[in-house]
Image (cartoon, rainbow, N blue to C red; front, side, top):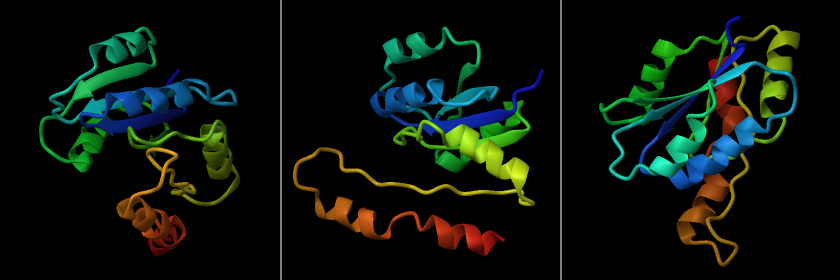
Length: 151
């Protein structure tokens, strides 16, 4: 049976945060059949212990794309995706525990082909945020506006 959802995650030198992302995806609520495709985008620092830990799962696939850029990595992931639905996230994201079931339900119960979720920014540390973190907290990822432009 093909997967219901293929999740494509580009990663570049960010295996520590990828570990948090994968833990979240493995513990998703709902009965959704999903594959996870991690596309390394030419990292120079690969955490082999993290790769080894997740290679035990038959629904997780590590591949490589040497052409720079997350879009190139995502496109490479699309080439092998088996799911009926494609989901994208990044290695530094921690999906909500109901991310997949909410997305699947929204697509099944509406007449749309594309959805975008809310993104909650968080600080690298709980100490004082940097100016860049404050800037991104206020202005980054206007999902509602971006999704409406595509509609």
